[in-house]
Image 1 (cartoon, rainbow, N blue to C red):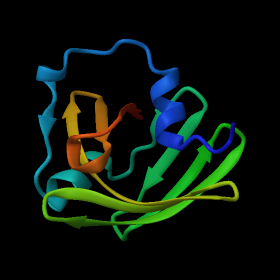
Image 2 (image 1 turned 180 degrees about the vertical axis):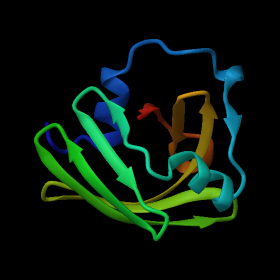
Image 3 (image 1 turned 135 degrees about the vertical axis):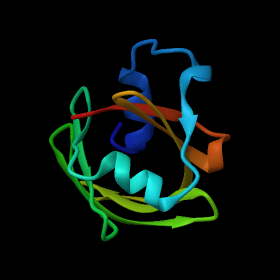
Image 4 (image 1 turned 90 degrees about the horizontal axis):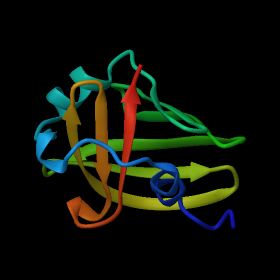
Length: 118
C-alpha cells in the first residue's frame, strides 16, 4: 500500500473542495514563493514546507518527506522522497484560491491535491 504516491494518498483523503474555476494558476516562481513563503502546506496526515531555496521537507502520514524543487516553464518541478520511497520527478501546475493551494501533476493533466496554507 505504501507504493501509492503521496499525491495519490492526499487526493484519496480529500473532501470535495471549492469549484475548479475559483483557482488562479500561478505562472511565475516569484508568485509561487510569495504564496508559500513562511507557510506550512497541510492536509489530513500531511504537513509540508517548501523553501524559497528549493527544498521540500515535512511528513506524510508517519514518514518523512524530503525533496528539491525548481520552477521550470511555468511549472513546479520536484523530486520527492516519502519514507524510503522515491516518488520521482514531476512538473505540476500550481493554482491558489485564498488559503488553499492546488498542485496538479503531469503539467496540469494528472491528479490534484489541495493543501491549506497555514
